[in-house]
Amino acid sequence: MELFPLLEQARRGDIQVLGRFCQELRPCLVREVTRRLRGGWTEDWIEDVVQECLLDVLRGLHGCSANSEVELRAWARAIARRQVAILIQREWPRLESAIPIYALNDLAESSATDPSPGFAALLAVLAAAADELTPTQSRLLWLRLQADATWREIGADLGITASAAKRRYQRLTASLRRRCLRVQA
Image 1: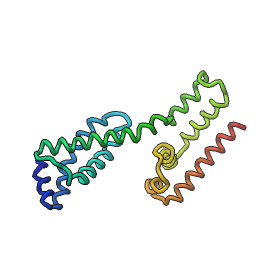
Image 2: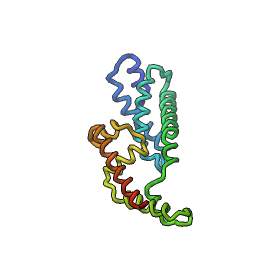
Image 3: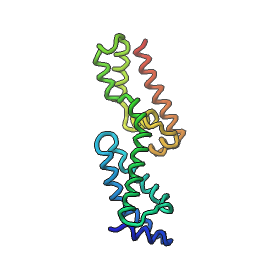
């Protein structure tokens, strides 16, 4: 499907064509984003990046100076590349600093890396506690500690109020803290 005629209709003021324009442009953006985010942790973000691209396209239509199909597609691909770069810039520091929970077992089992037997015992307790978390508790911890989400965002994700999300988090961390203190004693 040719996108440029749809763009020209939108420029003439036909806002009804914008939905179809986005539907036709979406596969192009999906291909571009998927090509750049293939493999690893970034695959989970493809759909979000495509949505951000579509929003940027709609916001930028008034400033789009494309005069042909090729120029329009190049402009859209440039938006996709920028959104991929924004994602990596935003998310990479969080991922780089994170210790995956599954790594706790490996740390606990390798006593050569830690001179303190108490540290190994603490890691073993944390690994066991992580295994016992419900999916909702895991999601709650991930959203707060890994994704740095607000209480409102966490509540929306879990289908509860922001204050309920905060209370659940406080109870969960207090429970984990008590469990760790028992090892220390």
